[in-house]
Length: 314
Ligand code: PEP
Ligand code: MG
Image (cartoon, rainbow, N blue to C red; front, side):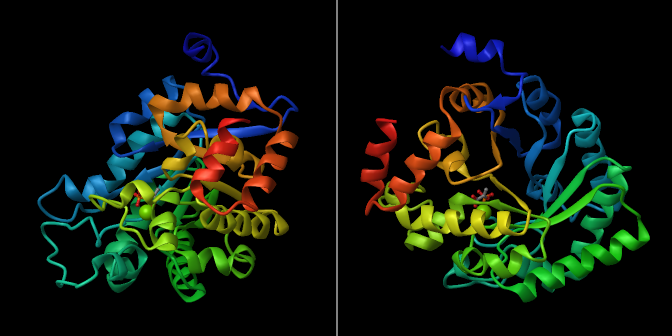
């Protein structure tokens, strides 16, 4: 089965009834882009830009960042790049930026909350991404957005940079990984170009379980119906405004979750490149209409275990 999947990894993933699901790669470094394309990625759905900041003893300057992003664009050869702005704080500290000790760093100054406090740094990153794009499809998303004010501040900053460096194909969106963003998705969907659902943090914050907790993390299951409800809200709000939705958390690479996500209407799945052939093969196994029925049934269940059992019989 895997051999067969591998033979078709470079072809698009269509459900049996012809619905296309875009399959992209999550990247934790710029060097992996060419390999991801060879493994069937139709673009990069999540570039975790943190690595550039962690790989240097000081904050990388404009030229350093631009060169790194350019490498990804070159490898993608016209395929879209979804770059996430720096997402540190919480579990991801930076050596040269001693952040104040916080009692609950996961509920503290992290993601876009941090970069909005450091506009110079955020602007440099946006400028580097826009200079590197050279007319190629660039999608920029902001992590940990929980309010419309955060989105608008980040968007306005990006739009200011875009007037300076005109973009032929730029979209601006947010990661939906804070439950409040999912709950106000109808308002956000009017203003963003896209959503990308970060199921790792969305699950953590929805279920109030630390994603890395030594004994509880196994219970932080993205297939919990409460998380599925948030995904459902997000997708319906986006589609009502004609916007697309991706999933870039771990769930996107879980073959059991794939029909549920497609059934909820997700347009794009982004996962580590090694899993792309298998996820594409999984998409080809079912029809979108059956997946929609499955998803509706899952939304009515009361536990992650019940959802997993249902999905196993699909
Ligand atoms: C997520 O939260 O689901 C996500 C994709 O981002 P990260 O794992 O980098 O926090
Ligand atoms: Mg996250």
